[in-house]
Image 1 (spheres, rainbow, N blue to C red):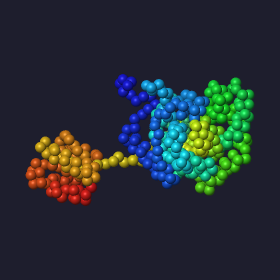
Image 2: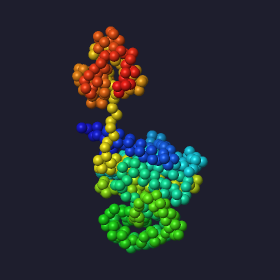
Image 3: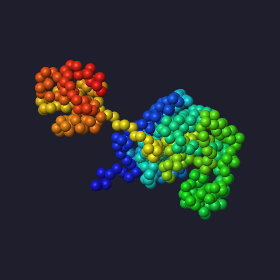
Image 4: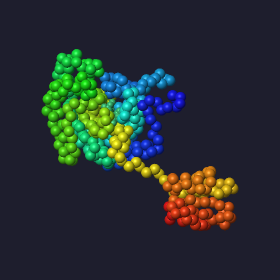
Length: 420
Ligand code: ATP
Ligand code: MG
């Protein structure tokens, strides 16, 4: 097969059965988010490149290696969204959404990252997530994590994920820690991986998150961020932790959790699983108080999370979750002769208007048509024959037991209502 007939590497089709699983996940997460007062919104899948490059930080993996950038015909530099938060914040600013704060929104859709495709890692994948803008206090952190927790629970994943949580502290704490960390890392620079050496000066916190073997030991002995938090940062985190425990939401502190994007502060969290191999993070989020202002908007705190749809679906598959039943049809309409085909079309049309789901088998012998109807879940077939037509009647066949009855066309709708 020619290359152009394959999906592009790292992309996939969502065929009906898979699509139905995505739709089910989406609808359950939406139900939970609505209970918390979140309204759906969407932003364009591409933005001016600056939206992502300035906000995510030029040293983040996402921006430095993973974005799909292109120039359009007008010469504008555009980027396919690698995540939603930057686009939503752009919208917050350009649409003047500040007047609606606290703003609670929910989104879902495709995101694009040029990554090495592997299980749980695609170049076009789908995210579902929430953002809460305008609440600076710890209550928002607890709300966001509780929402994520409830959503995973509604997906039947509660017992199979672990909540890991950390604090990056406020900007003062981070700055103080950064200095200590850079000193330490510089002293070990010759042992660090290439990526980490590059990050050392620009984004040293990310070294803590390194998955490279040679970095692990060095990171293990690195000075800890928790030892450099100032009192307000420690207090903030304690309140978040208390809030979660008041709700009975278990979490584990993971001090090396720093998240891939540059804009986080205070609380960061991830829900992870052991069941998906290396790509075990199903949902991740954090607080981003400086982002709106950095992008040129009014100083507005924010917090949010994003979950990977493919990973949520993959985890449900791994747990043997029953796939959603395909939508079945109610009625099949079969014309026995060419002369009756327009009558059959008209009848099917009327039935659909009356809210029945109708299968029209246009060709094949009656036996074949009935078999196909049966496969589609059809309960009754309406057979239009010449003889019955002259009397204004149709034959109604019950597929379950093969019995049939002749009824007048006039009574059909009422009769069908009782049968399917
Ligand atoms: P990772 O460490 O796996 O690269 P990340 O920190 O880059 O994740 P986020 O930017 O936090 O991921 O995105 C939120 C969620 O989106 C992830 O937890 C994951 O479930 C999902 N996700 C991220 N990148 C991909 C991808 N390339 N393919 C599929 N899902 C992804
Ligand atoms: Mg990534």
